[in-house]
Image 1 (cartoon, rainbow, N blue to C red):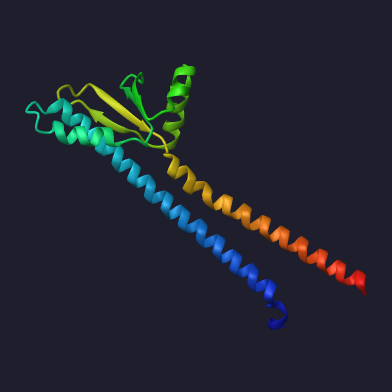
Image 2: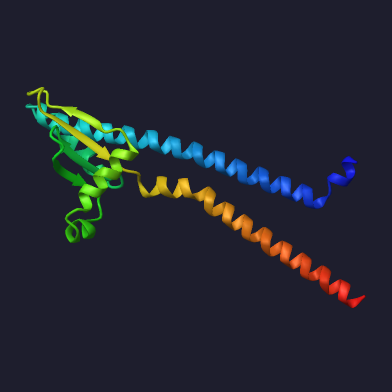
Amino acid sequence: MIASLFNWRTGLALIAIVIVSSSVFYSQYLAKKIIKEERLRVEQWVEAAKLLVTDSTGVSTKLASLIIPENKTIPIIVTNEKGEIVTSANLDSVKVAADTGYVRAQLKQFRAQNIPVEWVNPLDSAERDYYYYGHTQLLNEVQYFPLIQLLIVALFIIITIITISTRNKSTQNQV
């Protein structure tokens, strides 16, 4: 009974399921790791900006000037406590110039994706800025990788089934 259930096709199907499942789980693990890293980088970026405001000695200026330009991948939109857009970084400059509502649409998307990093002005606690950030291209690629891989495996299985059935029909036609 068990021998009839387990043949080379069943074995290949089980191996394919294990490969795809492990790929999905590993991709999700990587995505969560990248999300944590992005949040940390945004928090460092905000702290560097805070250092520029609070440090009157100029000692921290060098450190902040190293951290702030380092962010070239994470898209960020800064709003004040009233929700007005103050500035943005790493957005598609062509789309920003062409469409006046692009930054507002991105802000809406970023609000849905991540919790903002709040910055409170140390000199005036009533003044707050909110740093909304979106997913990087790397994170998007890692999240969609299992789907693409699943489509490729499905296409391979379909082609294999069609080839085997065509071969079997050809063999039957010769008899």
